[in-house]
Length: 539
Image (cartoon, rainbow, N blue to C red; front, side, top):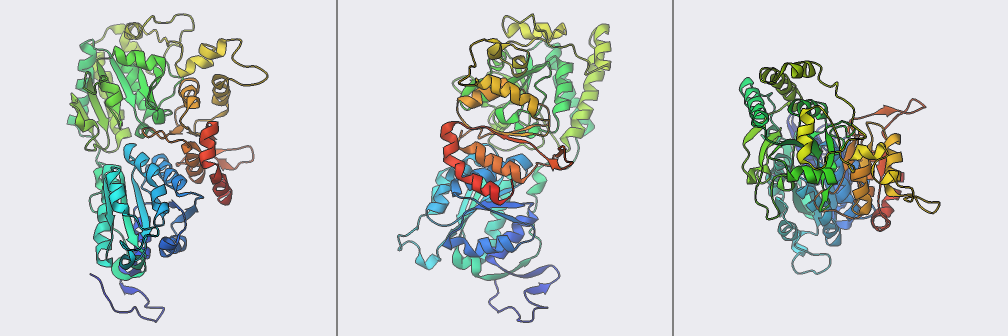
């Protein structure tokens, strides 16, 4: 309900209605909602149409305002921050070109299934549609770009319900939502609860562990694939970070190679004998081994996979492989476009996968030979990668795995560290230059398991995918679907502002997280002005 009465001038009673509600300006209400939804950093640019909103962000004790030199970079940094921390991200821009500059980062978040809220300012509604200066139909433009929700708040009475709808759309569907807010709405006052409630939006990430029946069903489905002698591989998306050790155990039990998306690098240890690299790198097929494996694969077990197209379809986009879906959140329009043979969805995914591993051990022990019994009981004690024998094709991989001969073809990430691939050539480096494969081989030894690696589009990313062997626990930030030039430095800004919940200790005892930003000469020029933003925040 909107109230027109003026709040009390008595400071002790100012803006207070009762213990659960108070007076807010529109801008203050949005800031309270952001903080209640878990937002910590708001990225954006200044402008006359967002002055009240920016002032409210700066004044709010739980929010940090990150002023970026260009709104394009702000939206990309906000998307990267949300992806890294797996929380709702937020970016802000003024009317006209400020709002238009946001578009690349918003589409990137939407396509990569990252929850992001975009707030843009507008001139007062009475001055729109007839005054040309910086007057664009923002909501129509963003809606046509494919965002899941884009609305204009035309009156203060609309702010609460439209804010609820926008926050819910972003959080529940892991997508980008947008609100255009005229400056007069930002300044008007309204009575609202002090705590912004999203209803069931946050409950879309299931909050209960898997039932015994679910564990039994998944273990049975996996066991059936193996007993049917089908070629099974495991694929991980970026949201599988945190359950990589369990994925490796399941792979060992199934004799299944592991692939990841580019932004999923670091979910599993690429030094592991069953890690075969990246599938899909900015429109390219991926590492040679992953491409060959997919060609001969029958069933894909996907753990927190966002995009199944690369994994289970042919060049015509038609499903040609079975897949088993494991996730803590099922989003309409992703895996639901296809026909899984089994779906396992539950909260507390790490705890649930622990139980799946134990269930698999019991079931496979009943169906395999005695020599396998010893292997399952000592899971994790795998033979080293062979440096002499190499399979002739992916068809041989599964047969070799069943003999416990874990052999990787040249071109998978960890083979570069063994001197195989580009780095065994004599002429790839000289006094004038360093070959990218050599550079990434060196960097692999300098980065620790908590490091954050930010990638840009270009040839450098192809070498990063194939020559930089990820350690489990590292995070890779990439513009996975849109492939934005200049993204890596903006992602580095986001990484420098948040450790993603991970810390390490340097020689002085200070807690630090190493961040590696890699960009080509073209990409770095598109966002190099944000080095000043990093300096502003002590990055």
